[in-house]
Image 1 (tube, rainbow, N blue to C red):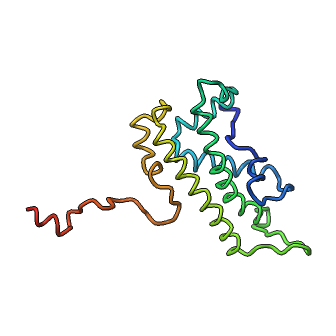
Image 2 (cartoon, one colour):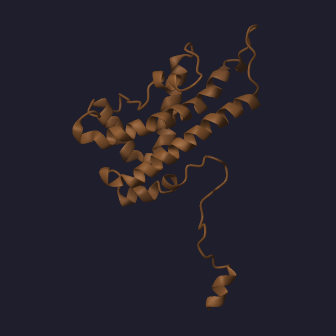
Image 3 (cartoon, helix red, strand yellow):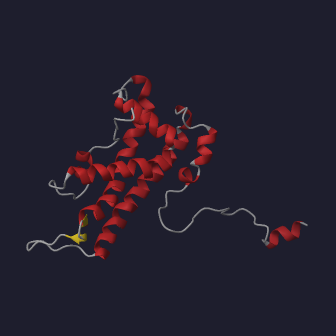
Length: 190
């Protein structure tokens, strides 16, 4: 299985839900899908569950009746993977690395987007991916008994990614409403 890989979303699906041109080279889209799956989705599902999905996909067993929960999970992940892949793709197609350094394409009939415009597009698709991530997380928590790979140990490792779908640079975790030791209410109880 190490030699073969299974991508949970197709290049065709990614193109169908976005404004990606049909002539974008598949190597850029494939590598973006791979990154979205192996980095971003793995942080939500965990290594064991993602491995099980890929194993079932390679064996072409996702459509078997006993694997309906896994098939549903793959279906839930489609849009998340597509939007995350697009975020990864935007810089890959905007800038090329060659022997002479980093280059930007320029054509007389096209205007190349600025870095700010590229960032805005990435933000747009990242916001969509964050929404989809939250849906996956909520669905996983509701259906966790259907997946033996989501043991208590695994859930503790990926816990922050089962309760928060924010991809911003701020840490949004914490006690949220719990009483802190520095809270004046605690001093009244002493």
